[in-house]
Image 1 (spheres, rainbow, N blue to C red):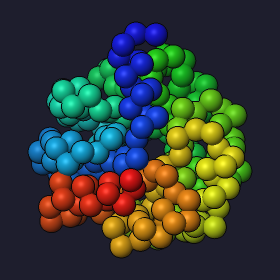
Image 2 (cartoon, helix red, strand yellow):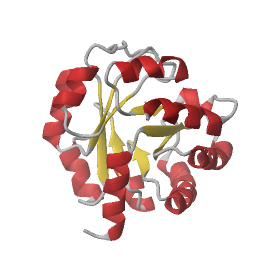
Image 3 (cartoon, helix red, strand yellow):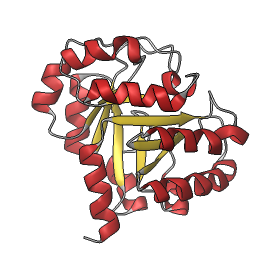
Image 4 (cartoon, helix red, strand yellow):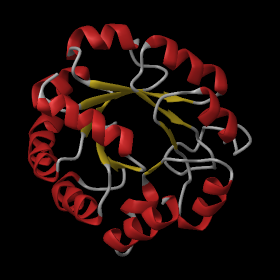
Length: 215
């Protein structure tokens, strides 16, 4: 195992706050500045999500953001596109339930790239483990403007999640400072945030306050 792979795995194991730089909230011309604010604030992982952008648009931006995450020694994750993950040599790829299977994606990105999977039920979480995911997202826990058509799954299964799924599992969906303590009290160890971070008046302060609660 090379040093870069070992460092990425170490960062994933330690990660508490996973940030998603969603171009549905941030204009592409502001994305680099926002990425730097997220990194300066102390996020543990940074994902780039561009649902409405073509790969040719995303690759140049992803390369610039990856320069920043490398300096910060933070894993950089590409959403949806294994070809972009290969092109920018990102540390990871994140797949949704409707994307290609993990095994097929693994054949594209190679063995050293992290692959995460979005899951929306206990069954999907177990399936992701069986598929060979390196980590999972679990949610939406609460209603979220990022995916308004998704029905929230609530906090009832959080204790089950952390007792049963022996992978890093990030709770996602409508998570913000106002409900973070409730999540932690109900067994959440790690969270992913999208709109709460990207719409914060002071991103760095929001991150620091969130990480105090996460411990």
